[in-house]
Length: 273
Image (tube, rainbow, N blue to C red):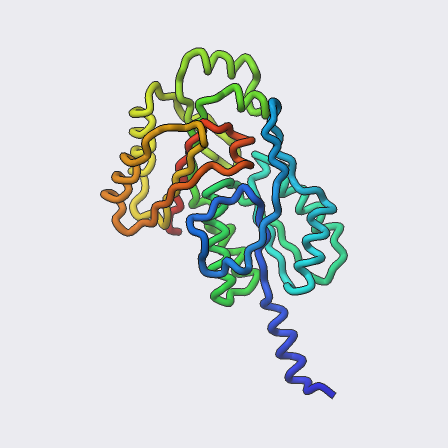
């Protein structure tokens, strides 16, 4: 018969066998990071049509993924885009309730998207790689969420109207004025912050935003395919202001392009707790 201590050892290993499931809106600051092998991605259906639509995976899609991951992992931490931007967290939670496997599934609404979500996942993956318990990894994530700040400049307000964030009348007026509206992601929702007239003013607004932080953990810039703003001034500003803070630049991915439009540029700062 198998040695009881050996069986207990296997059970203990399984108790700490954790993976992280996120969605394809996440933008990671680098291709590989500690614990990246424990991170899996659920794809959105990003429909870049005349009426853009970001369709989350279905409940059945999540249940199938939980079942596959449950063959290897005893704990699945699901960390996805803010409910204020998409219903994916609710779908994942509904699937977790219906899931009949032995694997524990915990769903966390990141209140973020894009680079903010990616930085949160990287932090959680590092904790998993360090051997932290599922409960500690979840605690680290939830404690870090309020310390992630994102600004989005979304010049094409007509796009926000097409996905339901603004009325058509608001979008038409905004576009006619030719202003560059800046939104802050607050509690997972897009909140209007200010409007600027030129790209120079936009850069100044981003710089003033970064001035509020003493020693950020990381800073990331994302830019849509139709945004042609020169980012070198921001890169130089970060280098001068925060010598030791990692700074990364990324293309806006398909899910965020559907949500925010191809002219969008965003700045994310993650501060130390």
